[in-house]
View 1 (cartoon, rainbow, N blue to C red):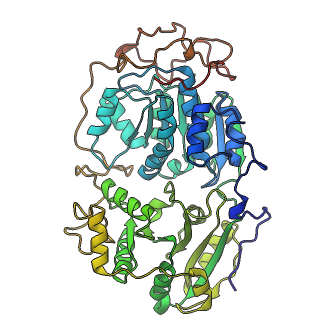
View 2: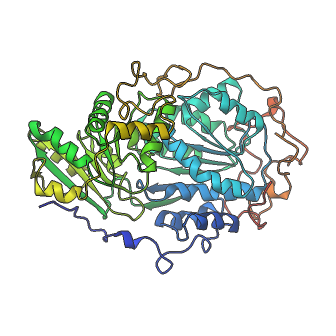
View 3: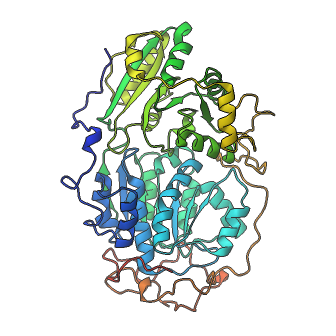
Length: 536
């Protein structure tokens, strides 16, 4: 028999997603009407627990320290107050000086956060751009020269642009640090600290992290002002709707078992430990008629985007990935996660597994275990608080057949080529896995411009930005005016002691750094009562 996760939490089924009878709606939580309309158009009416808990405080302008597991809905939990707050303040758009900032550890996560923020921002006349390595920085420079309101950035590239003088952060009103614990794991905290120190201490800050170890607690203590803490299950809390399986198999049968697990009709992610093995398995499955794409650090950003698009659009049902996809990659309806190679530690197991059973849905997680790995895996699962009994299987076992369910039709080489051509795959290729041969050797983490990969893992483009002489003035005449809306709280305290008017700006030499607080500091309280979200 297949073991099911034992947990004291109440069982959540797909039908147990939030409803009007059990949870508040976004409208009842005080989300501005413009944003409620956008959310409703996406089928999002009712809030999830982390949103219910945090929105009253974040919409009130308070600093928040949020803890929630992968798939808990935290992206919306900070995107809504970020957009609502900037709209309420009627922020002015400046060249090279955003007013909203979101920091994320990976390119994939930054891209997906931006996809959530953009429709909300557009509804209230705000603009959004992404900043990360692995791509040429020309587009990013151009966005800052035009003027942009909200930046979703990875720390490495943002620090580069700050050092080049392309961007400054002294106008930032709302800052979000997402997955701070993952940034700590990647060694980003010194860079994050430098970035936060460049933002005004009087702005609102929200930090979301699964844990508070590895220096995250120090980051919160230094940069959050009397934060309200909300915890809706830590990353290590088990997901009740996630069913765990351990399939013990012989070395001779492992490849066949993996192929069977990959052959189902629904989307699935297969995790490997190394880039080479991920590429190799994706190619092998594709040759067997199971279209698969790979995702790992040796792919350029364009290749990553193409692979994720192919996987998310449905014609490719299998993604073979290293741990680069364990955080930040969200594709709807992942029914199965397979640990082809068991991870090295329990946190990685939980992050990988979190790609399924997200936001109230259910999913299965399979760990493929060789007999000699049983003891090590048992220790890992104990640390992850997962109780599951291993069962011995081969590719034809009934337990495997029951789990896989309906098989997807095998796809011939000719059909694959036609599908790639239809997607534009003939113009540059899709991936290392789904296209055999591929031409040329794989990249080494370089961006499309051949930029080198730095020690923080984000490729730096070779083009260097010019230091715009016009930094500090409004990007365009039609940008929002800085009227009384720049007052953040009901106390009416001005945002700065000199309270710049719509036509007054700070020159580049008069920038306000993180060590120069606004006069009087930032009170914790309700924003001005003006209706939120006036379009530009």
